[in-house]
Image 1: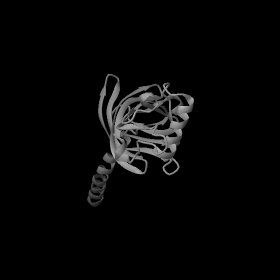
Image 2: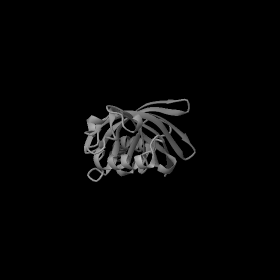
Image 3: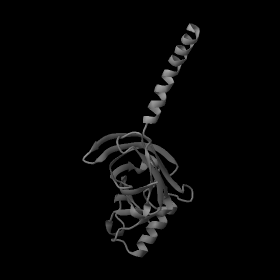
Image 4: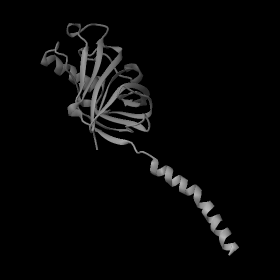
Length: 212
């Protein structure tokens, strides 16, 4: 009887740590997954003119038309969180009203064939590696660190954003800049010189995503 009791107690002691791990597992909150809705989102690249001023010296306001992605977020904490965004490079197009339709056509052609070389580099991809920030005023003030792959070059960038949740929708608003030279992006066309910009490219976004 004593041998049986000792064996029982030893068995219970061995199982106790496993039970604690099971409790911790059940208390873990998985992040919620959201799918980016490009139709409800706005994503622009702003390139200020530099050097010789063509087309009345106006800057370029390029719209990103075709993109998708996913975001994961714990609604009660900053982490775990992640973001992946995929852009079709050929979908970028000039939208500034200062340009005529004919001028926009020339700019878009050079943007695809010379600046971004979309036939060679069809995709622009961002994948987060870390998210930091705080919960404030009913939303998330965050900085997303990640790898941006553009024009055959991958570099780490940081994207500040304000994220809010409403029902089953997520909204992220923010802006960031990159140096086009870091991604070996040409500034001047070999033919017309229409796309001539300064080194810094400013990205602005108002992204809407739906819970899946």
